[in-house]
Image (cartoon, rainbow, N blue to C red):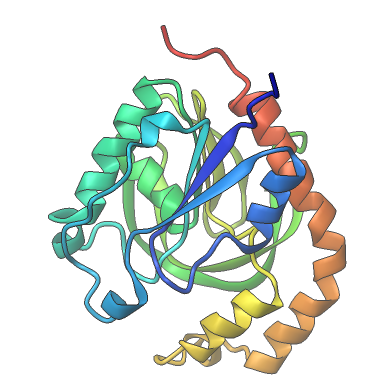
Length: 243
């Protein structure tokens, strides 16, 4: 009988925030990839509303991805964000490993008792991340695009940071990331095309500068993403399941 591959579910909370390079890294580690669109492209301008999620407990890993909205938005909390939080709690109780990315990392913090608020300084572009555990989260440049930051959930261990914000925490078999390891040129171009409020220019950057820097770092970043996934699978997802 053929061995069954482990499966990762990516929760696409925003139609322009896909799994990109992170999906490729999980495939490289032998995973089958499933994707569920939480907010479809048709609802991008009005994201609140009920969502019929799949059963997260049937997956080995669940990865809630980024979004342009705050996790504490009242209308979203009353609809799919609140629902997703409960499903993530249920999945964690069932032993599913969780990896949150940006909005998804903030969502994990909020789900397990931390808080998320506006940061005094946004981070957009490539920032050097200081890591206490490079075998889990490699230090060095990672791409950022966020305006909020978390406080740690009770019992969580912060393992990476910048001077502006916590960048990674581990809580049991869950890990939250503030940065975007998934970003490639195609994904960044989609984000820049959607930058209606001029967030990049307001941060003192320009589109060409970001694209050039991203192109320069893509080749060097790809193996670091695989190392990140390997570290997560080994040291976080590989830890003991709850009894």
